[in-house]
View (cartoon, rainbow, N blue to C red):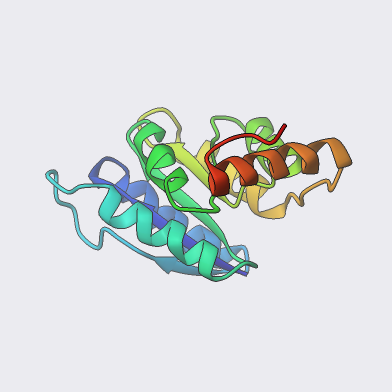
Length: 153
């Protein structure tokens, strides 16, 4: 599976480690940057292309990284069709996939050790969506909201 990664300067080193780790897991990492450390970079320039690539390749997943992961999650969620979830444990990563069919996981490099981030990524990549009717119903509501700007009656 292709896995699209994007980050900011605060997560540059973690992104580099996760690009290698994703490959070790047998997936194809696609690094959307940054490609060098720049303390003045703007994370939307790297995170949004990663999220857009996930939508363009429906069988792919994404990983976005920042200091806290919050801004990166917000930016990824601005891409139509993306469901990005902030994960801080393997359980939140698992639930993001099982219950929300999240295609993108956001991780905070200043909040998460490299070992924990690897465990989160592994869990996220290995966990399928449950296809439970109640979870699909909720996703469908979100998709209508995104498309029409309102929830259906």
